[in-house]
Length: 219
Image 1 (cartoon, rainbow, N blue to C red):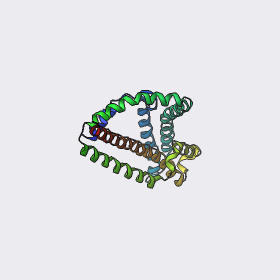
Image 2 (cartoon, helix red, strand yellow; image 1 turned 135 degrees about the horizontal axis):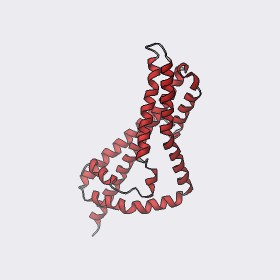
Image 3 (tube, one colour; image 1 turned 30 degrees about the horizontal axis):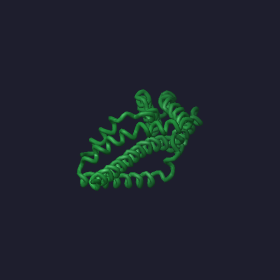
Image 4 (cartoon, rainbow, N blue to C red; image 1 turned 135 degrees about the vertical axis):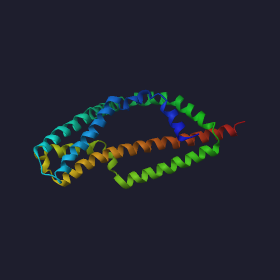
């Protein structure tokens, strides 16, 4: 019994209707390209402080920044399209996903309930502790800003676009805010994915212990 084994079994479960929320591989690759382009965009702003500014720096930024935007744009467009679809067909998507998840949920619980109760309780406590710590860290770092979604990326894009013809003269505070918002978005995305996973672990251990208790008390 380990979190690794539990996660492996969860990853083997088909996604069902909610699979539409998963980012396709080509979009993940594009996101990585965008992340690299974002770092490359920052380099000329750092080099200008240690060497004489040159036209090549402006050209560098004018190439890498559009690559950054174009790489992220498909996933952003897809995300809003998926959001629109799920809002439109929320009822059918919800019941379809529940019908799909129920037998899978039961299979995982049956496997967990075969483990010793002391092992389940230990893993439950660890998951609960990790979840509370993760929630506290997110709250301390962001407050309620995590609810902004992709808005930080859009604000960052606006800050760069409004200074497109004078990128090298862009105020430092706007530069820091622009790249900070991008990093903030990706950090919060990963943190919330971790929190969602920990919530699932905690629920599974709680339900497995309840199932084990019911089995023990039944004649």
